[in-house]
Image (cartoon, rainbow, N blue to C red; front, side):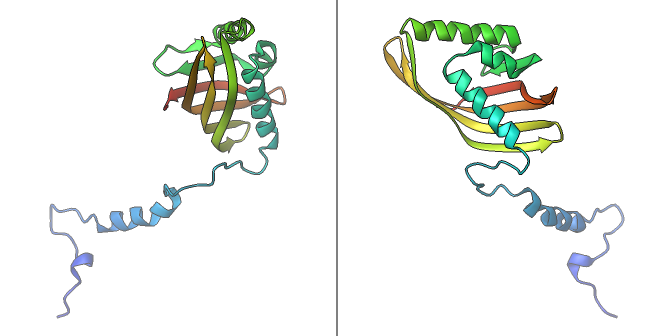
Amino acid sequence: MRRRSPSLAIPKRGQVNLRPLLFFIAGLLPLFSCGRAAPETIPAGAEQLQQAMHTFNEAFARADATALSELLTTNYLHTSGNRPAIGKEAWLEYVRSRKAQVEKGLLAIDNYQMLDVKVRLYGPAAVVSSRAVEQGLENGAPFDAAYRTSQFWVVENGQWKRAGFHDTQIR
């Protein structure tokens, strides 16, 4: 009588053979690997989204609430760190207060960039992950901050608009 390999043995009553499941999971690992990706991954077909994000970041760097308002959905939701989520008008008011600080010389932004951008398209919607860096002076003191961000964009009336945002300070 030929003996079966222990790895292929039929489990005894009451036992569960997990080997097939482990082989299945091992086969899926390459699909979900966490290897180091390129600094930016923008899928083909996302050029309009990329342009909208660029325009948005430029408007934010200069605290242009009017331009930003055009790039936000009506029901925009913004969450920062451990603060409560706020809507579009409250966030635009924050932008206006930031502009007032700039105009009074209390805030100077020397550098504002989105790095390590990764985009996932889902038809007329997209999820964007990035690292935002910002350097400048606030009340005469230098600052150098970095944030991990998640952005949620949708196509509304043929134009990409930001529908949601979340950030957490990492530096």
